[in-house]
Length: 320
Ligand code: AVJ
Image (cartoon, rainbow, N blue to C red):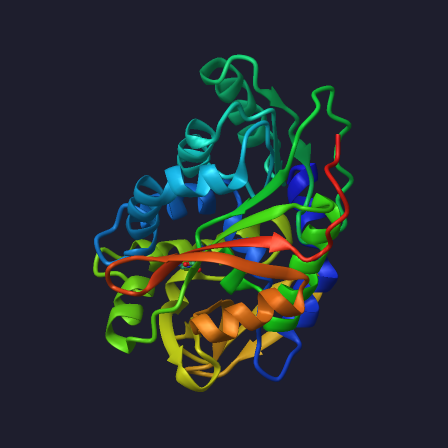
């Protein structure tokens, strides 16, 4: 159990979720090292359209976006991940000054920073090791920058409950300062068949990704989950506009997590992730409620994945 994993998901969070009437687990448990790798594989699966759609959107629209952002920007990226989209953005921006990735995975953060320093000579890279859902202190930059751009692609905003999404976006606006911009990727698909295929793909990668949560808990929280006795299920909750990832108990069983004991009925689910598919109007409202004024939106041909470019509502001169 390494420091990041211990800190990332406390026992209380796990136990309180499993004590809920509808059992749940914090979705960040999906992203241990094995989970991050499995997620990379999901992005290559045919059924999971989001990543390919967003790559195509970025390739087509980044020149226009870069013109709106302007030169000498500071880019802040919560949950920087493997960096393919990051490279597209940094490559499109005019004389970008500073890049600030924020991530809980120390290794990935360090590897990415070294690689980016090599690929973008002169770019100041200031990695921040931390959980971006919590308060973050930005490092002091040695380079002056014009505008700050927060980059949050991948429809990861959909993994927050709506109120938590507002709080998070508000915190980003405060962190980024006046005149900042936000480039956010979000999926608004409401087609049940397409969504169930994307979140329970025919190659079984998403099922592996979901079940990995139990292996993670067995490793880090002294749990006794038998992965063979649970199965992955994706559910489209149309009323809440969200996909729900469930791990369903195949039989009545008892599982220990540390000293705590949990009983599962046959067919009883554990909710491991919500993926909200906010309609464009709903997401525009969430942005406005959070202090961001929508400047432009760019939709993919299927009208599912969108890039949202928004400007901080707090205006007060340029920051240096
Ligand atoms: C974390 C938002 C990129 O919700 O689509 C993919 C995670 N979960 N398959 C998403 C995920 C199941 C993904 N993002």
